[in-house]
Amino acid sequence: MFPPDFAWGAATSAFQIEGGWQADGKGPSIWDTFCHEKGNVFGDQTGDVACNSYELWEKDLECIQQLGLTHYRLSVSWARLLPDGMTQHVNQRGVQYYNRVINDLLACNVSPMVTLYHFDLPQALHDLGGWKSPEIATLFDNYAKFCFQTFGDRVKFWITINEPHICAKLGYEDGIHAPGLKEKGTTAYLVGHNMLRAHAKAWHSYNSEYRAKQKGAVSLAFNSDWFEPLDPSCSADITATEREFAFTLGWFAWPVFVTGDYPETMRFAINSQSQKLGFDGTSRLPTFSDDDPFILGTADFFALNYYTARKVKAGGGVDQTLSMKSDLDAKEVLDPSWPICGAPWLAVVPHGLRKLLRYIKDTFHNPMVYITENGFSQMGPVQIEDWERWEFYSSTISEVAKAIQEDGVNVRGYFAWSLMDNFEWADGFSVRFGLFHVDPSDAELSRTMYRSGREYARIISKYKTSGQAK
Ligand code: GBH
Image 1 (cartoon, rainbow, N blue to C red):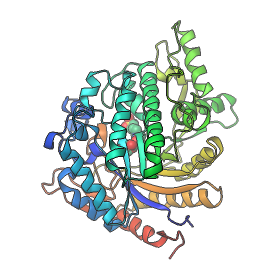
Image 2: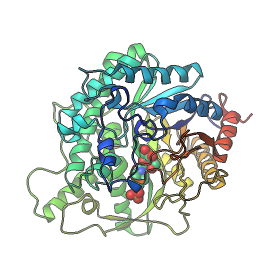
Image 3: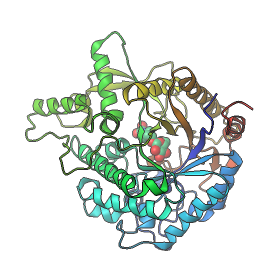
């Protein structure tokens, strides 16, 4: 059914679970700032305490053991390790915390996959220009080398940046994520560019300074929906679908896996829109120069976060102002046959993952793939017997099996998002993705296994190690 030693995991991120936002010398991140400002997050909730994993790590470890995971994906908080973002000042208490997490996981036979950046830039670096400044690539590389040096003897899977596309678009174009900027049609491209430069620099550092000794793998995690034309016989919808892929997955995966540069489709769309609006000067999509690190080939595996699917219709985005939406010039449409559960954006389309995996195999040279996030949320009343969520997981997992067996996609692992209910960014605690329930108003913050957690544990024990059903 699955390859031997398939990774069965669950994922979290530092800001969403840790809390301890000022504990033991941690510096603030842009998400601390963003959620302390009223009106940015559902109910003005914050990540100050979250699941308090900073103090309750043992509880998380118990959850991980109850599920029988082989792998656990977590992120480290840049500002907890380096309070002002720079390596001159290391917060040893932060180092101790992550050492303990990593050592405990290994003692329980669970392999850590560590993300260096999951949306939480140190505020001090943002104040110096953050992702908009070209200097960030060197600062990120220093941080990455510090992490390889400190934890790389034990961590064998690294993700440099989680979802650069989401980070750039939601944080700098739509303004619904930190730092809350709405600098339409320009800054997201610049930020994305610097993220790619930062990622590539860190990959090269690992490759030349750490790989021989530490023998790990480094990648970055892409988020992509599955896209298909609303009318498959309409050529405008077909090219709009190509643009959707180019502006989401292709923006980052094409440079890394195919050419070292952005998809032609993307640059063409941006430049023609600039021309139409009389925006002259250089392309809003930056160009890589000879001084930049080589981007092509800077991923040792393909990390994919998949949640949902969209149909694509041409047009709809064009207006007289500069924006990514008008560059893209496509409309995302929901198919009425796809159930919407949990959150308004989350149409349930498990078969979209199989199609996307096939697309990745064909487009990006048959890479080794880890599904680093996939999940289903709950809103409103808490249902511990969350059969709907389990139905989602089990059909998604069987789509993964089909992708492996029938389409020959080289999938090596699957991580459920998320280990437990947590701070769901702008939605606060109102959207629950956990395999364990956590009630933020419960003083103990107890972790209670959902039915989906129980069922996932059953599947894991069935296929673990040999990949064959026991
Ligand atoms: C992932 O992003 C993140 O990596 C993870 O931290 C997060 O908890 C998880 O998804 C679940 O959302 O509310 O309509 O404005 C996936 C990309 C981007 C998908 C934001 C949902 C909400 C759009 N997500 N999007 S909306």
